[in-house]
Length: 227
Image (cartoon, rainbow, N blue to C red; front, side, top):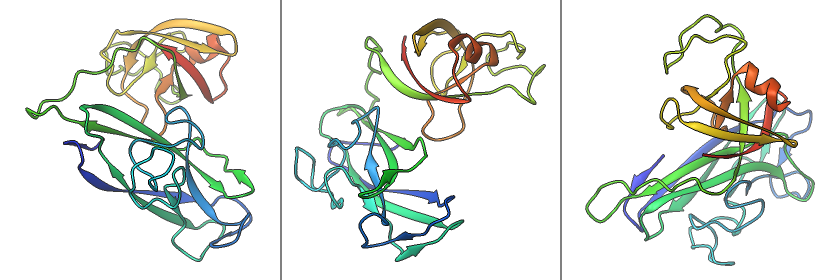
């Protein structure tokens, strides 16, 4: 999560693995791989305050389009090969924490089967201190996975013993014991933060097995939450 003053710029780098059976071919509609803006922030195919091409309210940071931060740099990325994407981000002037979610796609064909990645960019106050975190008063849509197999019986980072009946979530920064309300497919539960994680970019929560079952989530799901 980069931190800096308003107007500061940085270069972001992300790699995606081509797990399909067809290669990605630069310059060909329906075959070239791009990064696209995605949910939850700023939203699929929407402009971001962190970068763009200067159109649709986006800052001019040399993206390929206002909603396409980067295109594959290599002429061809075959199956089982990796493409490295680079793009510039610029911090807004106002102090605060900003988020950008990205997902790979084949332009003119389909979004790839990947939940994508995201970055947080924090703009510091003029005195160099971090801005106060925003209150989670509105519902936010995020990606969640689950954890447990191979770890049962271990102590969590918050001091509980992990079992198949423990309800809770792992989160990177929320204080241990913080209550979060999760909703998925018409079901809702309120559970505490019991561990740290996830360790995979683009995922906001790891659910315990009991929480996963209570919500009816598959191994990876897109759910909404409030604090």
